Length: 70
Image 1 (cartoon, rainbow, N blue to C red):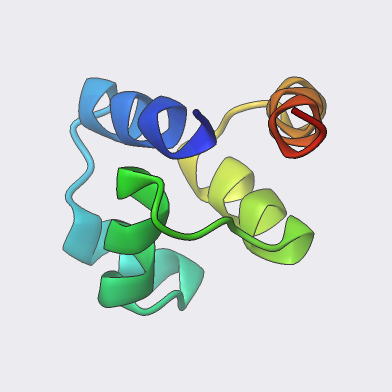
Image 2: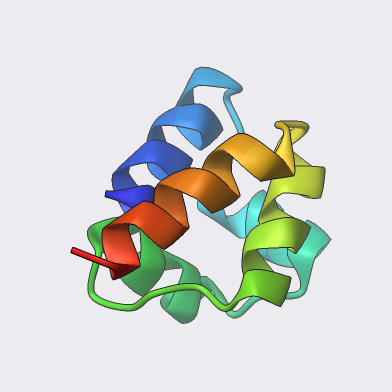
């Protein structure tokens, strides 16, 4: 799931949810729901998260699109 992957990347980089929320301007509650898989991020939010986490957008986008088509 994309939320699990984002949470793992965030934790591996030792970035708190609070810091990620501040940098991305995504509400911490919404970010929590994304990481738990309760909500899907928009493409814009996903791109913003990729930039903040310094991970390539295309591989995550591919994973995200693949999940939506299941």
